[in-house]
Image 1 (cartoon, helix red, strand yellow):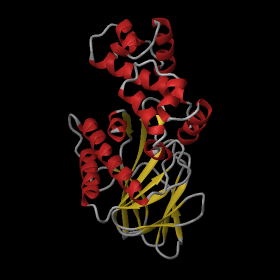
Image 2 (cartoon, rainbow, N blue to C red):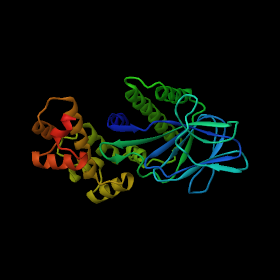
Image 3 (cartoon, one colour):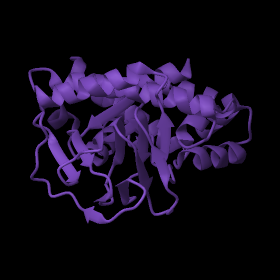
Image 4 (tube, helix red, strand yellow):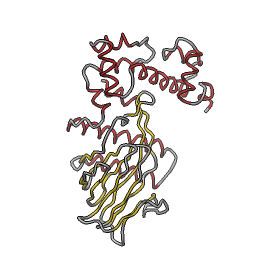
Length: 298
């Protein structure tokens, strides 16, 4: 299934989680992030305010997903009388970084973190997301467990913690995609592309075997569309041209082969579909800022 191959090709980078705490009557202003921000409510209620100015209520076990570049605030209580911004110097009782807007009494607590998720290369899964959204996981205790384990890994860093955190975040992404699929709101355009019966076969061909001689002709034929219609529909759904998707999927596949096999650079280039080593090396260096040999050497 394409959705399974999608997850096999995801590259997930997770920044350290923090705890956001608020008292009633306080607002915590957060700057525009350079990656997607997650806020999972552990206790209490608040409102998420973005540049759209439309408050989004959040209660226990709800998850807010905020696009990169969108400044936002968390507000607690019917009336806001005080405001704060992250100082970066506080720690929570569990030794995590803490962002707080409060007096002596905490009414709201959330686990907050930033992630970058790419598919088949530099194609950001959340790149085309236009606005923040909130999902309710009150009926799914597994998601609460995921965030509890994320906090525990951040608090008790040990060998393998980074790998465990990425694995937990993959589980979180699966839960997000499943819930979005249930509500059918089209918040993540890539999800719509994967579910598009015309685009899905072409994407599946590339992800399942990037080394094949894919072309705009072959991919549009797999979609049952004309070249121009397919290219337009693909770009509208993903923000990339079909051949950008092919090239970047090949480069990511090459990076995995260099890191996990003893294939020669020429062998890797051939395996992922590059006709010449020079073209492969240039494309690889442009993407990773390293030559294939430098990448393999670490």
